[in-house]
Amino acid sequence: MDEETKDQSSTSTRVGATTDLPHDRITLARFREAFPRARWSDRLNAWFVPGRTAEKRISRWLAEMEAEADRFADEKGRDAFAFDPIESRYLEATPATLQIQTPYSRTVVNEIREIPPARWDADRRLWTVPYRSFDELRRRWPTIEAAAERSEPEARRARREAIKGTQQDEASKARMRERRRKRYPVPADDAPPSDRAIGTHVGVVFFLGTDGELADPATVTAFYFPAANSEEYVWASWRLGSLEELVTTWPARTPPNKHELERGWWIPDLGELRIARRDAQSRRRARERKEKGECSR
Image (tube, rainbow, N blue to C red; front, side, top):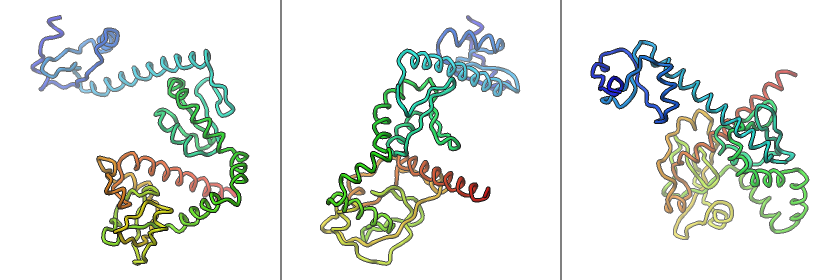
């Protein structure tokens, strides 16, 4: 053990690379087998592997270990699914992955996106989830399935028929008409900047400017946020940001505070930007599919 634990004082001048490892016996034994010349450095508090290609060899070994761990986790998830499967018309189990195909629902999308290895297959219009994420999928499945059922065309039509002609129906139509105008109320004396992405009660947008038209407080409260009695608002036009613009936007470190929420705009945090970036990416893919379809005709 003396040879392994002595401080390699010369490592600072030797060619090689260092790595930290989980403190378990099996991983350490496999590492020593793969790198017999590796030595522990007390000074660096890490394993030192000599050689000009040491960094590449370590990275390749770690990737192989991770892939092996994923395969093992997938086997466990596959066994768990076989023992107690999720029975649903929206879920299909294949030998490689679990596949989810539902009517479009923002709730479904948001839930599946919280499962990190989940991937959207644009060509087949479905989500794939590895078996190693089965436990997380099972935990979220009741919400996913309920949202999918609410989004079925028959369910949507039934809801529309149920509220047809009611005040709720009129309010919903009015809200849609207002959104199509792409305007937003901002304080007359505290307008947001127009050169960066801004968080609002309708999502992350880029403001184009204002012509000074006053916004009716009742309209502000009905469709956007509670208007302050002492505040004067003007309408500002806005647009959605491109993926490139949103990716390069620097996020706020904290969510909006009470003052910013009451004002109606703020610098978006990372969570808001992630949603906006995903939406922008979806819009880009839809546009590319449309252009591809037009070119093939």
